[in-house]
Image (tube, rainbow, N blue to C red; front, side, top):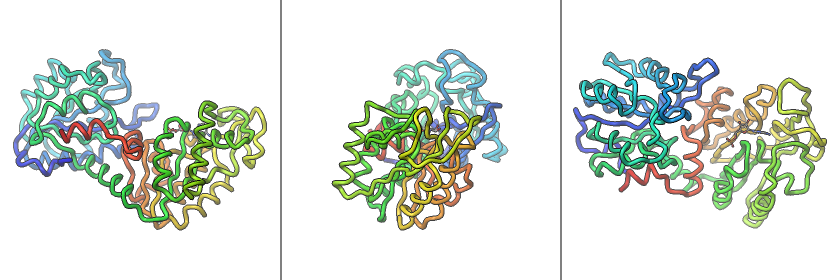
Length: 398
Ligand code: AMP
């Protein structure tokens, strides 16, 4: 995969950079974590230092195409970008994506200036990988750079169709994308052992393929979060009203058998924080995993599991962590995830955190700086682990 540094001379050119500015916001619309934006700065600065005209584009959330609702606008992103870039030159936001305003602003764009297009998903063509929309975007620029690792697993117009419209001398990966891909590939290819995967989150289904792939690579697997209950039920445990995917009980059994056959140590939580309903406004208590009463649900791992998992990762040299240990969004059920984050950060291992939620936990725990690498892409990093080819990365190669 060629990176922006491999492009012979981009000086003074109009460069289109597909970024991932799909940042989390709170209920008041404030950006709560701008890591993805900070990750994009290196590529943007590289272009500005070469006096390029820079066009930035990103999706944000899931607006209804064709409806320009303010809550999905990139206006807040542009304000934050001005603070982060700390440059004197102009940074403007177009009122549309490929419409009259965007076209006029592209025509007026001067060297060393930045134009941000509105939310790509305001246009129906984006998620449809539409060739006409991709062409409209491509016509704006001389060079196409993809720096949106978090969106590379999606065959969308600004990620795939657009990349195909540039030849190899006029398209490349940005610094962030290159760093993400190199890190995952290198780690998965030659991990220092013991190599431990910590997998959590809501469902087995979303991580099934990644789990299977990981079994061939890791020495130990720790399962937490809602997905643990499918494995526990598959072993015959009573799990009350906890989250479960009954259609995956056989898959869960197969995974555990495969782990045993391959000598991969497989750890499930030994206790939980349980509550009678999915709420933080009710009583909650600790119970061993064998004792979840009917009508109650497990919403976080308990203290004994946290201690057990700390022992398990103690000697690890490489740790991949994807998925929280509980419903961390509610403080009452965040302890297991926060402790997991501290425990991972405290090891001497190379630690890789993947997934928006997981990065959010590490951030809340104050551990981000202690981790070796925090990926900006959840789905994309899972697909890399699964060994899948990512459309955005493939399109840069062709
Ligand atoms: P995922 O997107 O699959 O990584 O899942 C992240 C989500 O899993 C978070 O929103 C958590 O609230 C949720 N989660 C974690 N543990 C549980 C649990 N025990 N019950 C229900 N949801 C959970």
